[in-house]
Image (cartoon, rainbow, N blue to C red; front, top):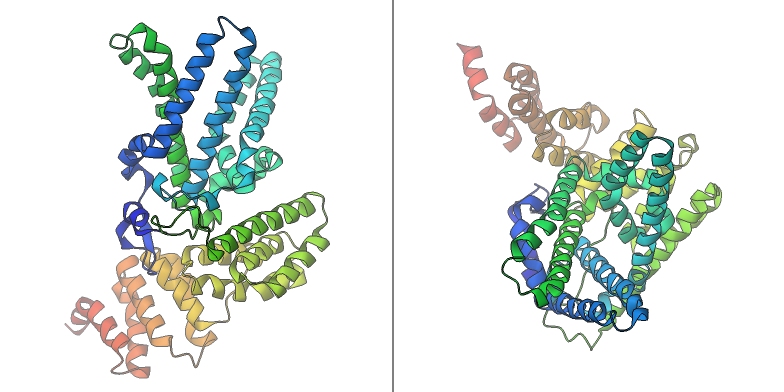
Length: 453
């Protein structure tokens, strides 16, 4: 990602695994409100405003020009998806947009969204006719899942996926409680449109009211696109979105480099493979889906995406087959090598829900995950990961560091230094003079003094 993008998207510290922490979206509201005034989105906004206003004025003389209004709506929707899709992959400033980032699937997304809204509207109408309360409930649910619908469309470019309740629920779950906060901000933005128009009515000449209305509508649409895309970027690990490795802002857009062309081909192939597997799974052809995903892993030139894809299918497989347990250590090792610690922890927890009692057989990977959970101040998960570490990995050189982390989690996380003393005493016996033993001694200095007193 260009430095100009990264410096506005990350905080000064990191998540403890060396990966810069992406700033929460509510800390960057000013950037979203200023985005429509960047050069490219501003040109689109002005162009669409002039197009829409001209068409509406001419309709009084030539009624068939009514067809220009849907064209304007398609133009707004297309650019909305472009902004949100690029932001979801880490491209947050329009000056970093290049032609090789364009995806042909984006042209179909406005139609797919229209189809989804048509299905929602039909369902609301039928339920409303049956029972007014049911209609209101359906309308509320439709509004709540709309941001998730947009996200699923961006990730899959498939209307069927955007109508799948499981896909929508998984997306909402991946984002967590922040999804409700996103919905609140989007609701406030929608409410802000009529308020802005009311403020403009007294000061805008009557002949400019129509262009002003269109511009305000487009302005708020661009803000919402930037906001939704950034939330996806903020949670790209959980949503399993690969960030775009694009050329520097100074690169000549017309001179597409071989590396950029290769990256574009890889992105298109990834979408093709995702779609193929999704179709197989939906048809119930799990054996073929597993065989195809495993073959891609065998011949892969991009290990992590193909292993991630195989892992998703294995989670739907019969756990008794042993395939999930066999693949998970290799997959988590790949994630840790790519510093995707949060995704690695999530993958392990998903497997443990399918296979109770499953544990990694790799000492460095286990310690790395425990260190990550401690950076999140999750003492219970840290201790759970390290339970029996010295017995499972009796000869591992990571044992002193694991002991130190256990002491730290018990003392600082659970506030029970006395319970950590036996661990420290074992460290003194087995690893006297080791830096981890000395660190544990410093952590327990107060408890040791009170014990001696």
